[in-house]
Length: 125
Image 1 (cartoon, rainbow, N blue to C red):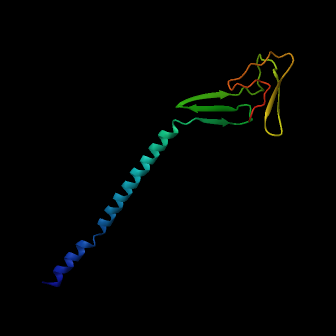
Image 2: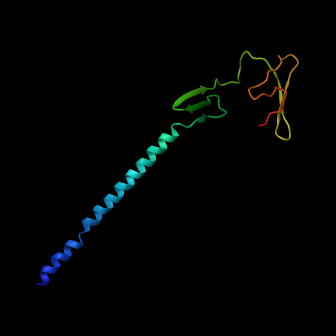
Image 3: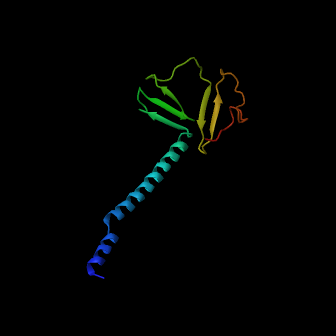
């Protein structure tokens, strides 16, 4: 056996391209894992309810509500709310956090709400 023959075999074992191919395989696995994680996150966030308030307190305020893939936009008119309603009473917040509604004398009698409490009963915040 000659020494020249052994050097040829040694060069085949130290090929730098073999390590580069292994790095490409590792990066491909990482990219697939990241794309899968993004796809799963996008699917779960599409079912969530989100409320976004743009330009709060400004005349051009807008409220965007997203529920179950549907989007509803509410735009402010630039002034205080107005309508055909009448004042029905006054609400007070007590020191313990309860809110009490007191109807005014001219207001129609309050009916029971969906929770079964009357309008004059305290409600938890």
